[in-house]
Amino acid sequence: MGKTIVLFDVDGTLSEPRKKSKQDMREFLQELRKRVTVGIVGGSDLKKIKEQLGDDAETAYDYLFSENGLVAHKAGQLLATQSLKKHLGEDKLKAFINFTLKEIAEVEIPVKRGTFIEFRNGMLNVSPVGRNCSQEERDAFEKYDAEHGIRKDLVEKLKTKFADFGLTFSVGGQISFDVFPNGWDKTFCLQFVEKDFDEIHFFGDKTYKGGNDYEIFESPKTIGHTTTGPEDTMKQCRELFLS
Image (cartoon, rainbow, N blue to C red; front, side):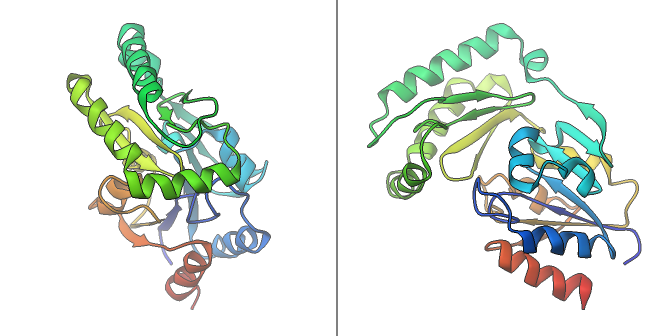
């Protein structure tokens, strides 16, 4: 395939949201690596990605970009990290967190659990229902949110309140949305590969505007592919790269 790299989102692309990828997917990706370079680009932190793709994820794939590439690994070696805390500063960070928690307190939803804001190296992950909810509660919130637009409404409030902070809001997964500085979306990872490859393919499920795969899917630097789930991902890849 020449100098081709294929980048994959995790949730909804290689695995069901927040679930461990299946053995056939992991075996398929190793088969694919014989033909092209394979990279993972997820919004979650490294710990969560390893829970889904295996403890060897840093070395099992050619590139591993956690937190949209704000933490970047190549062949198991750390390339670079970015810090949200340094970028925003403590005062802005505190103002944002305080306001967001007050807004979540006012949101009327069937259940609330714990960990409403998860602080990551390069982003904040905000969940109105709380990341400590069970899988059953996750599924229920996803349906409730689709009907009532809980995340969408909260994002609009935060965009208005913090319009001068230079932040991007990206809905992903079932229960949350990510908040990070403009430009720190999944296109951030492209700086580590764009000079070394002739073609950069990207597979993701949330490629619509406002989804956390949209920017990299639409980037002129990539060839974007929308997938409906792990089985579809393997099917498309077989047709493109293994036939």
